[in-house]
Image (spheres, rainbow, N blue to C red):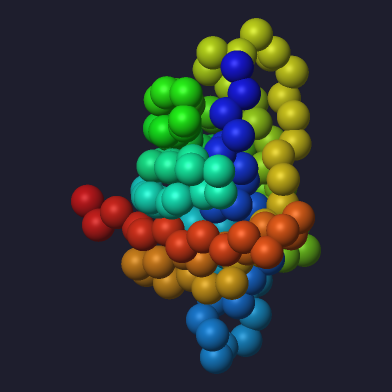
Length: 140
């Protein structure tokens, strides 16, 4: 079963960035470290799709992504797991487990650009569209 909004995961987890609006670009290591933690989003997408998500990124680049998609025909809940690797300012998202899918083959996700990241907020833009999403870091 595919969940169209797991694009959200990829948007959060794939990156090329500047650490703040006015600072010099961050190194790959700095970008990786800033992504560690739990990130939440509550986004209204086109066609009436409402997505609530949580992405938990560990210090080794592993992640778990949970989302609830409210669509016109009902609610779908999805979970993904994978690994992230920052290389030359790009974050490569390899999905290693799409819970509920029968595919066991790891696959590369999409690529996004981090527009802004700090201790509380992450703003990303898809490289395939002009869609921009802002995530809030959990303070737990």
